[in-house]
Length: 457
Image 1 (cartoon, one colour):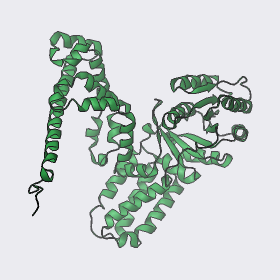
Image 2 (tube, rainbow, N blue to C red):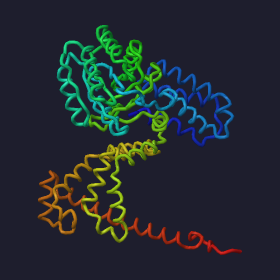
Image 3 (cartoon, one colour):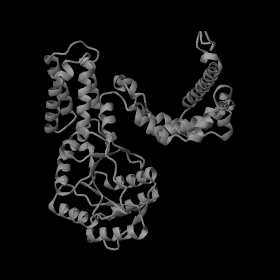
Image 4 (spheres, rainbow, N blue to C red):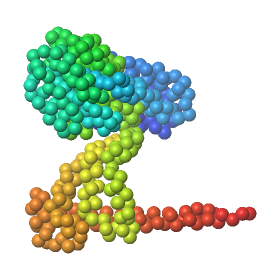
């Protein structure tokens, strides 16, 4: 997400970093480039106009022109204005209410409401350890109810199917009664979508909102619809007391204009970003972190959180024991664990997207970060016997042919994997030796620093 906007803004602002004195002329030129970048990213025109006015007022004032490092001050201004446009600060779900906390999802058909309901149920269950009941009030698409039931089973949430399917309000009433009967902490209500906004749709969802008295009314919108996302959000915001927005399909949105437009136009904070079809593809929205990613500064905090959440700590400790002299015990099973944990964090591309400076990496190099190779390597290791995974040196020519056939690859690809494993073993050995050296140096008087004998004068 934001690839197009990030590349354009990063290259524009990079010319200012470390530069000399700024003038009104080059500030105007920079803001012109920023304006073009925002418009190309499909940000709504009123949002662009306000953004440029605010940035210009700060840029030509004492804040930038009087700064000792005006280039860096200008970058700071753009960063803060981006954050302001995205919604100032992170807005969490209001879950600390008397149960059941009701969450109503609204939006057009095709925005991904039903899938988002499943993702949200999983997110609440894992992060807040609360019981969730899923219910559908879609009286137009019976398949949507079946889909929600399947998702509920996959995320280990409760599911309620109303006895009648001809009245959405009655379906919502039944769901609320069932949530109270089950003592569910949270009730997520999935509502019907339409291909376009119409009066009947708005009347129906207003009635559902009045009946259930939800704590959260979340507008689910496809980020790839660009400026249309902001227009649709505005219409729903006029009809409903929206408490937040969930942007879906952000992994396929290279422009990112919807995120900047929706928050500014509706005033309702973006609470989540949805990525892909997998049920773990939902992340809390942090305006400050996203503003940093757009400007190529990375998002190390989110990366650390991903690692803490996704990495199996027992496996990590076991792997730590296989450094230095223990490196020879680093088998292909261990390598597969590393590849699978990387997959669970969204793959190599998702990880590197959060590292500072990735915007300056040539596109050709970024294109080589193909997660399909990870999956091929996992398939190759799975095609081996337990003994082969533990003792890779036993894998001869005939075994390689069998492994290649079993994994749907070829012998050169199997050879490449085995070579990578050897290289990783060497790295593990070096890492262990360095760690041992560091420990030994710490035991020396004065921490091993030259002249630090720890003796008195």
